[in-house]
Image 1 (cartoon, each protein chain N blue to C red):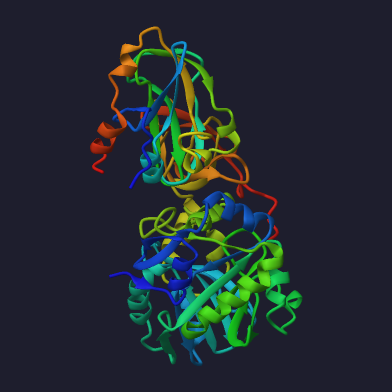
Image 2: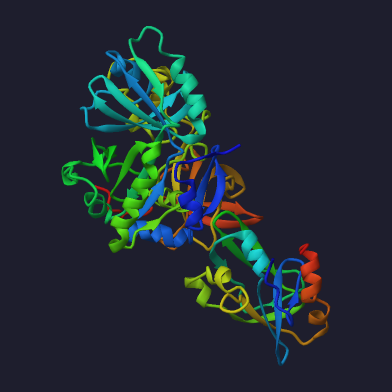
Length: 365
Length: 127
């Protein structure tokens, strides 16, 4: 039985198309994916992301624990956030996540909805010897994201916190629309914006307040359909599509979130260090579709008769008007400008590897 | 309950066909099919070429899926709905009018006569 988020009734009343996603019944779209996508690129949109999971880590060893558990460095200032992968000893990715450092001894970890149970078990399996307390607050926490070039103007109407002083990947705890919230300048769209973490029971009040504050900016509710095209257009990877337990951060070009330059021990370090030195056999790349149509997840990539890769995400890029894909290709075919063909229902479509992001004009700060 | 206008003919691959006279026929995607496919984001049109019955004329790309559309009988494509290049979602919003796909020409009217009536199509999709 799928769970409902605190905003389920809001979505139904707005006429959203609701579908099962990662164990939740979620809004896929309200009007049209393209319209919602464009609203976020040119104005502002609001998302219910309450399906995401939240784990809190408190204790004097919190930083040390996260350094061992995650590939990125936990030593950011309180008030900052970082993106990281969490890996198995063989380098395969358990999940990708965002970590907010709330205090020197307190962190909030945001994990993918589809991985909450797996991650919770994994995290708990590695606590021995660390003085920390862990809580899974996923069911008590709601998340509303306000994204787009007008996001700050909308959000500022609802809080006395000086949002201009909160930089990208920074956050503050404060009152938002009369409720206690974690206000973070993070997102998954390539645009400026905020993610507002709140108590489950405050979600409807926050949603209504955001919709009202955004009215003068033409705010639109945005479903998971546009969330996917927005993230793909800026080349953000999606767990389950573009990475999973069979891929390492080095192959996924996430080497920048692996702290190999430090001498800190972490799960998977040995494999990643070796892979970085010897170069992996495959890489994730961005592909621009040169013809009509677009390959989707699972489409095979060829150079002549030789299969050299597979598409992991593919869609029309609404802001660009052509198809774009993320794909794994063999080393040697990953260099910018390499021309390949994708097989789509028996036909070959020409594609070319390009530098990410596909869409370069985002308002992200 | 789907919208299936009387007076049009229908195929098993969910195209509707309208007789424009002079051997010309307009075709599009049925309301039922666009609802199944979801939001259409791109249309790949055929060239102004000759096709046999059952040949792939073009492709409709929706957010989650893609479907080809087919020549209902031997014909030549004489017009395509260029308005769909910018606004493919017209197929969803106005499947029997603004969202038409192509106009084809044929010398043999028997192909059209052999297609399903509205009632037969309704039965075919189980409504």
